[in-house]
Each structure stands twice: as structure tokens, then as C-alpha cells.
Amino acid sequence: MAVNVGNTGNTRHVARAVAGTWGLAERYREFSWRQARGRSAAHEELSARISQDPELCDLLSGSLPAGGAQQPELLLAAVRYLDGPHAELGPRGETAYGRWREWTVRHWSEVRAVIMQRSSRTDEPAHCATLLPLLARLPQPLALLEVGTSAGLCLHPDRYGYRYRHRYLRSYEDDGGSGIRRSEAMAVAVAGAPESPLVLECRSTGWAADELPGLDRMPRIVWRAGIGLDPLDPAAEPDDLRWLQALVWPGDGARAARLAAAVEAVRAAPRPRMVRGDLLHELPALAAEAPPEATLVIFHSTALAGLAPARREEFAHLVRSLLRGRPGGGHWVSHEHHSVLPWIPTPAPRSPHPHDALLTLALDERPVALSGPYGESLHRLPGAEGVV
Image (cartoon, rainbow, N blue to C red):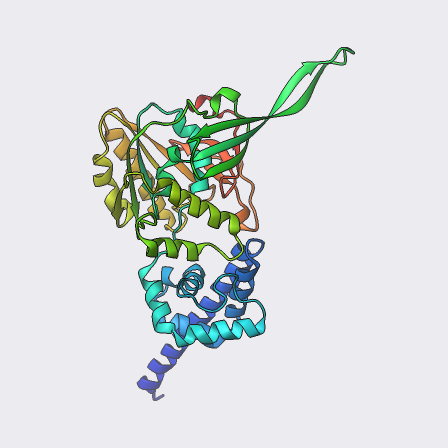
């Protein structure tokens, strides 16, 4: 049988292109269903329409390298960043999508340039409300080193205000002799910087009143540093702030307000030491810069999910080794979905929507609490009282 080599090569090229287009369409379909659904109606609709647009998916898969550059968040943010149509609220309806699509294709070289230069990684300053009770109870002063940072906003927990609405059970014996009855009560703990433009609200359970931070029980931080693929300085660089604003999903006014307030809160603060690069490669040298008199705290919040499981295990081994080798030791604070570090035992419920899943707060690989994905709640786990 005679084989036409040229045609075979062309067939393989076409097959790869078709597979790439289909895979990218599926990625947008999954994003619409599992991430945007219930959080942003505009992004849910837009990503679903893109998944059903084979010509646009062919453009995206053919001109963007596979992997991180094909994340839906990057495309959607890049068009908003460049003031594409419906940038504020997102395109809704077929006519609006047509305008959005036409603009995106016409400006594709600019859109692609932004995608290739930027990262979809953002900081969620509200995570500080879940980290603070742990940080405040560690030996002071602290040297904070954040892995997977974006703009270093979580390196300033002492510059925000906090209101913990603490629910606890109160037991008493009634006069009728019917035994012990339990009733629920609510208390409010105020902590942090009183004049901060950002006040974070958090519902907490399972903590004793004296275990939550107060105005006089805050961490004392003497050194701050972070590692990120694309470190930003939104307090000094308007373009960096503009990119972070573009990453906030349409309709999420609360998150946009938190970002603006956090940037304002840290504007006058000395800049943390920010290192660009791979977190495993850069971590040893940066950790060595921490002052020896301070407790080194290596921490991360929703930063490791993008790593392959083998890389996560390599990271865990590296952190353990660094802390063991440091005079006086240190601590590892992780704040991730329970599937990211599966060897940490946590009774976190599985959820069909990852953005609804609780995060596990752990100290040195021992679970302490479960938190909401945006720092809105903090539930201390039974048995965690002896961790710190």
C-alpha cells in the first residue's frame, strides 16, 4: 500500500488542531458550570457561549500555548482590562456577545499580548481574617513569607480591621430540674487597626473568647516577603491595580470594594520583599533572608492547586527541610482546599462547585479550622485546641 507522507502529516496536524479546539471548548464549558455558575451570571453566560463558538475556540487554541495561557480567567480579564465592550457588567444576550466577540477578534494581537504578560493569580485580603487567629498565637515577632503571592496584600494582616461574630454554646441547668440545656449565644470580637479603610467580617465558631485576636492581641511582624510568578504593586503602579480590578468578576461589588480598601490600607506601608519566579526554586534563598530573631512563618492561601501532585509533595518536603534546618525552627501555615494536601486529615465536605468548598487551615500539617473560600467564616475543628 502506498502512503502519502505529506497527507499523513497534514492529517495529523488537522487532528491535533481539532483536539485542541475541542479541549479548549470543554475547558470553557467546565469553567462556566463549575466555577462561574452561582458566582457571576455574566461570566457563566460568556464562557458558555465561547464553549459553543468553534471558530473562536479555534483562534484561542491555535494562538495560545496550552496550559496556563488558555485559562478562561485570563481571556475574560484581558478584554476587560483593555476596555472591551461590556467591560463593566459583562456581555449578556446574543447581540452583546456578538459585539464582544467581534471586538476581541479585531483586537486579538493586543488581547493576546496581555494574556501572555499577565497571571490570573489574585490576592484575597479577606483570607487574613482566617489566618489572623493563628498568627496571633505563634511566638512573636514574626517573619512572614507568602508563597504564591500576587500583590502581597495578605502580607499585611496587621493593617486591616476585623470583626469576628463568634457563635458559641452556653450550658446551664434550669430551675425545673430537667437537666442541662444548651443555648446558643453570639459575641463580637473587634481586632486590628482601628482606622483601617478595610474592615473584614468573619463568622467564627469553636473558639474561646480569649483565643480570638483583639485590639491588644495582634501579631508583631518585623519582616515580610513573597514569591510569585508575576508580583504586582497596585499601591504604586496604577496599571497593576487596573489588572487586579479586571480580574474581579462582573457583579462582585464586595470583592472590588475589598481590593480597593486593601490597597489603600497598605499604600503608606513599606513594600514587602517580592521575588519573581518559581516557588520551589526561590524559596530556600528567600527564607534564608528572614531575621534570625523572628519566627519564620511560611504560608500560602489557595496557591498550590495549580501544581501537579508530585510538585506539591516536593514543596512539602522542601518546607519541612527548611524549617528543620533553621535555628529556632519556624512554622508552616497552609490554607488550601482539602484535596490539595490530601495527607492532612480534614472532615471537609466535598462540593460539586469548587468555589463553594471550604478551605483547610493547618499549622505544620495539623488541621486547625475550616474556613469559607473568601474568609467569611472560620470553624475551629475539635481537637485543635492543643495545636497552638
